[in-house]
Amino acid sequence: MLTLHLGFDTTQTLVGFGLAALVAATGWRLGALSSSGAIAAALVGGLTYGLGGLPAAILLVAFFASSSLLSRTFNRHKHKLAEDFSKTGRRDWTQVAANGGAALLALVAGAAGWLNTSVAWVAFAAALAAANADTWATELGVLSRTPPRMVTTGAPAPHGASGAVSGLGTLVGLAAAALIGLLAGWLLGGNLALAALVVAVAGLLGSLVDSYLGATVQAMYYCPDCKKETERHPVHSCGAATRLQRGWKWLSNDWVNFLSTLAGAFLASGAATLWL
Figure 1 (tube, rainbow, N blue to C red):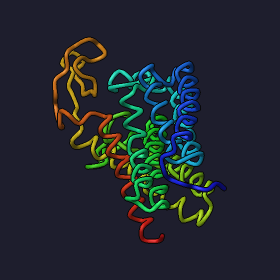
Figure 2: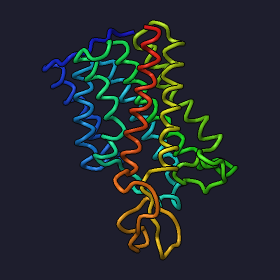
Figure 3: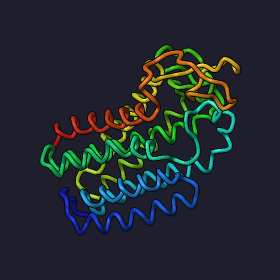
């Protein structure tokens, strides 16, 4: 068990940037991060270590390592689906910011005294749990033998469709969120079961917020040549220009990811406030 102290420390931050740069460089060499993604990861990782110390850094690395490993392991299962995803393969800087931004904001809130330290820690963990749940559900949900269903209507949907959920995807999403919750509780001790439960549930709900936004207001485009819906814009993978079919033009998949992790952090911080 480690001691959590949220606050900005110059020396600790410099050490954090050095360690984060090593992790980011490894991710870049392994193909998990683009050049811009590696730079963003080093910045997010350095600030995370600077504000939250070793416990926060361990939790961030656990998310990055587990999600990146799954992405590489099951990438071949998404080959056809990747034609319609806005981004695939290496994470760029916007994806890094979308997945780690809300967690970093939770640490800032704790360091600034806007949130109780323990509440901020739970919010930080839940934001990462939501990102982890969404990643695992996306990577493994495509293996489901039964078609997923739209989270809004329950209608059958193709694998990979924005807003679609499956039983398998939901279960592995819960497992991914629980992994972060258990690790967060173990690192700092206290009521392990309660911390794990709150972080796991908040993380899963955050990932479902992602699905709901994807089904309702996320910008989705239409390829006239392929005659199908896609996240890609301004051109589809076939080279044809795509046009907005539904949703808010500014609400890209990256914004959806950020808002879902923010929702997970918000839900967890509310629950933590009640018991702390």
